[in-house]
Amino acid sequence: MRHSQTEVPPWQKFRRALQRTRTRWLITTGIALFSLWWTITTVQTADRDSIAWGQRKTVPVAVNDLEPGHVITNDDINFAKRPMIMLPSDVADSPVGRTVIRPIARDETVIERRLTGGGTSGSAALLDENSVAFAIPVDAGTPSVKLGDYVTLFAPSDVTTSATRGAGPSARVADRAVVVAVNEKSLMVGVDPRDASSVARALLSASVLVALTN
Image (cartoon, rainbow, N blue to C red; front, top):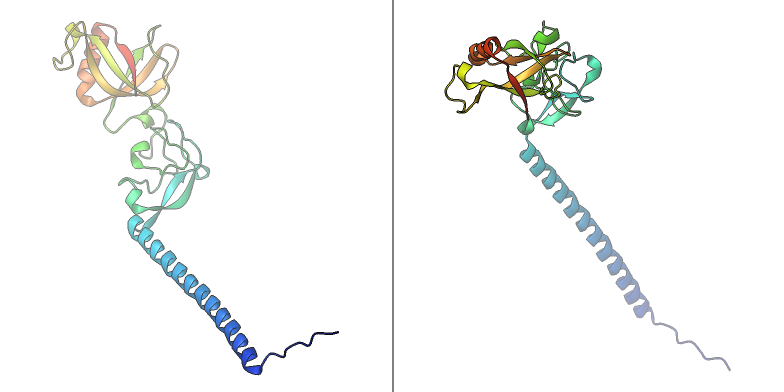
């Protein structure tokens, strides 16, 4: 014997269809509202980042590590946009053809203080502006140095002209002297002109001790 199926009244069918339609509408509306919220939030975040980082400027960036003495070519640099708030004040505008006087790391912005002015080459290209270079004889006590390293020079106190660089048997005659040339017999260093007379007197009167400086 078969059970007769109760026919669903039309008003219930309409009610169920209306409920399904309302559910779909609510889901669709929720998705739309979420998408709108996400878009607004993303735009606001981008605006905040833009305000925080400020405008960007196209600057020269090192493609590889550049060592002192290297003359920059077009293959050594690339131009990239960097936030101006992060840039130093002395970004190099025209680095090609200039000599590196301080190490420049890969992806680092190329700046003026790491380069010599154009038109110079060799050891002179590694000298800071107005620096004076001296050849310092090397011996077994001389540390291993390379171009661009900084050294401090010491000499016996009785031959120095400065009384402000430490008491005792030795005194500093030059701070942060930059190495501009190295060979088996000597190394050439550039010193501040204010230290030139002390270094010269030390070289004429006694030996000069070289200390590597970070």
